[in-house]
Image (cartoon, rainbow, N blue to C red; front, side, top):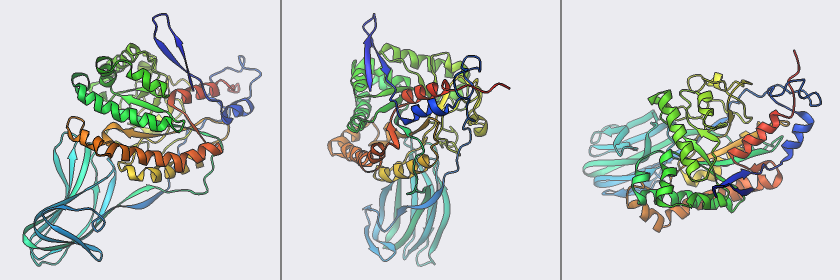
Length: 480
């Protein structure tokens, strides 16, 4: 829930009204903090239990990610399913799109046989539109079948993927090929010992095009508004984590758009990626983002980014108080050992030493709010993805503590490149509506029932932070 007040300059400042959930009652009874109050100042408060600083080891299981016999092939060749293989006839090439997750490793298993020279390739389109062949298998005419059995690691800068089958001259080929990976296992027995505060994040990368090109900004804004409205219909809230150019673009192309989204419950984070430019450049980027938010009436408190340098004390001087969505810039992956309970990372810790970053420091200048730092690129898997992740998160929720989780989307994960007219076709042909329908189905079938049962509370990083700050003040550290 949100309420508004109008400042002397007429700017609306959003105040988050923290939802009081059963975990707040436990603060009074059980306490729990990292020593934010001294024994003298909180003589009537209970002693703090040991902070939760250890992550958990997810349970993984294998999943089928691609099967040549169930794919939709288009192109020069005539494709048909023959037993466990896909048969191709003709000359030239046919391809099929597939969805893979960046930073993950998949195993390719199968065979390729042909009566003419043939090739099967997995090709990635990188973020700069370069085509990169990740794996390729060939077979000579009437030679023994080529056996496929190798791991394929997806690069951090991958955008889209397609599998291509090529016959050099008229002939026939048989492709038996599957890609398997791993995903978190479901736990039907999981029950949250205390409610999980659940948020939804969306990233937008920084690019000057968002300030220079109204069409590109509008296309990005259309995706954000669509997701915000889907979530709002369920009582959930989107937290947008854009680079500074998107917020600056709002003032140029659509003043008032931010207010419309906030009326739906949307909140905001600073989003930065320029750690490689050094601490000074990172601090400047954060300051600029905070100022851009202030210019549109937003007092932002959450940060996504900075994990390579970990200069949390410096970045906190811009008014930031929490951090979300850990990502190792080298691997594009989340913490190897996820957490459910927030903590205060020590200044200077980050992706270089995940164990140090994951250790609570009572003097830590900012609060890390844990959740899922990765997403599934295939929206048709959304319900399955959130089911599995929430099951394991709920299994590690602790009574007497604040428990948080969130799911991430990326604006680039919806449709073609926003710099092309193909994006407009994606929208007009119902592609955006179809992707949003998949998310709506996951909310309806998986998450809403957990909200109804009290195991999950729809939330956002601002409310999560306030819950944790209140939790810290609910107890005292025993004297030595």
